[in-house]
Length: 243
View (spheres, rainbow, N blue to C red):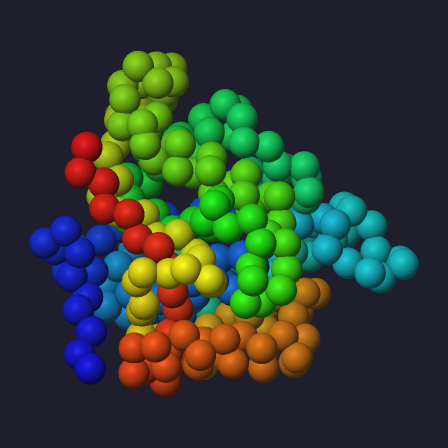
């Protein structure tokens, strides 16, 4: 089955992509196979990570400050493997992300700077996953909703955050949004050719990833792939923005 790689009338090689995650590793878990594929095809990709991930450890000797440094370095290493152009960090504390105007303004600022055609983020409507058996992290939901609000209408409208003009940042219209959704996707991307890059990228997050995690990711990707006749796939809910 041949996969189309064209969106909104242009090939992926002409696209700029911004991927917005709540924690270091979120985007790499959910979309790094697709991102690796599209970078190979010529897309330019940027990451925006909202929190420092400073709560994700059971090590009794770990501190918030040390873990934040570790996870930032892990994300930078993972991005380098993929070929991501730049990673922006907002530095909010893990578990404390709120969908408020301050967060939205920061996301809009990066959107207006990078000027992406496509934005990847986490689906804020997925409160829990029936198939994978977990509650979706509150940071994921806050990140996803704030990103959607930033994309539309805030980044588009000149009078939203008018002070951006003094920074040389002009309004920008995003064409498409890809929401990571495990239970109810409508768009599947064949990542068979980049599955090994996805696994290598995840291994860079050594403080978070075990061999069991990697086996689980490979299994999930295989199950998604079967739905479309691919060996491995990633899945999303896609929004085309016409306004």
